[in-house]
Length: 129
Length: 202
Image 1 (cartoon, each protein chain N blue to C red):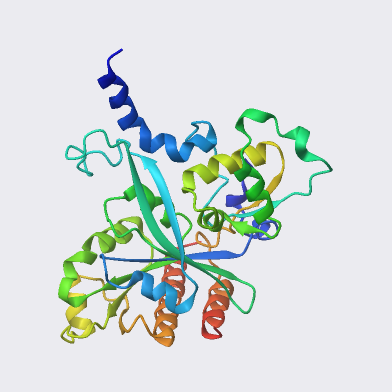
Image 2: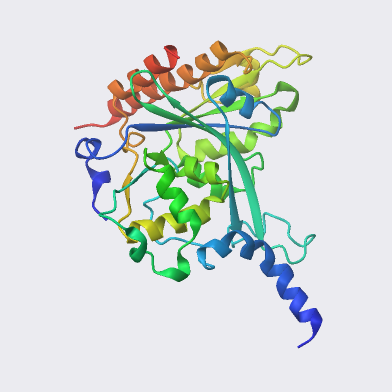
C-alpha cells in the first residue's frame, strides 16, 4: 500500500489515461474502416437518438463528431478539429459506427490502380489552383 | 468486410475520390512550408503506447516510466476544381516513428522527399523507406539562402538514386514552385505506372 507504488502507477499510467479517459480506456478500434482519409458522414437518426446512447461510454465528443460530420469529413480532419489524438477518434468513431450513426466512405483504391485518367485529373486540378 | 479492394471500378461508386501524397524529409527542411504553400495547414497528432515496434529504436531508458509518445504532423486538404480531394501529409519529423509512416504510406499515391543540400544525410531515412516500400517518390531540393547550388546530378549521385527518379530544385515558399513539385510527382507516378504495366505480360 506504499505511497511510492501509487505514484509509480500514476507516472506510468498518466499519459495513457489522459487522452483515453474519453474512450473508457479503450485504445484501439478493431477494424480498418477508419483510414486517415476515409470520409465520415453522420446518418440522420430516426428521431430522438438520446435513448440510443447507453450511458457509460457516451461522451460529448461523440455528439461533437456527429455535428461535425453533417458534411462528410475525413478522419484526419475530425481529429484535427477536435484536437484529439487519432487513436481516440478512431475508438469514438467505432462507437458511432456500431450504433449505425455514421457512414464511412473509404478512399477509392486509386493508389493500387491509379488510372491514367485520375492522375491526369489530379495534375489538371493542381495546375488550376 | 466486403472485398472492395479487389475490384477498383466497382469501388469507385461508393468510395470517395480522395488521393493522398506525402511530404517527407529531415527536420526543418520545409515540409510544413510546402504544404502551406498550396493549402491551409492543419495539425494532427496521435498518442501511441510504445510497443515492440518502437521500443528499441526509441531510447526510453532515459525517460523512465514513459509509456506513450506523441507524434505530431501536419496536413492539408485541397479540393481541386474538378472535385477530387487531395490530401498532402507531412511525415513526422522524427524518422523513428515507423508506425506512423506505415499508416501515412498506406494508400498514398507517392511522396516528395525534400532535401537541404547542407544536410543531405537527413533525407536518407525517407529515401530508404520509400524505396523499400516501392512507393514512387521524387526529390525536391529546397533552395535555402546560403546553401550552395548543387546540380540535380550532384544530388542524384550523392543519394545514389535510380536515373528515372526526378530531382527538382524549388523554393517551397513559392506557391507556383510548390504546385510544380506536386505535378512533377504525379507525372512521375504516371510514368512509373505505365512502365510497370508494360512489364506485365498477358
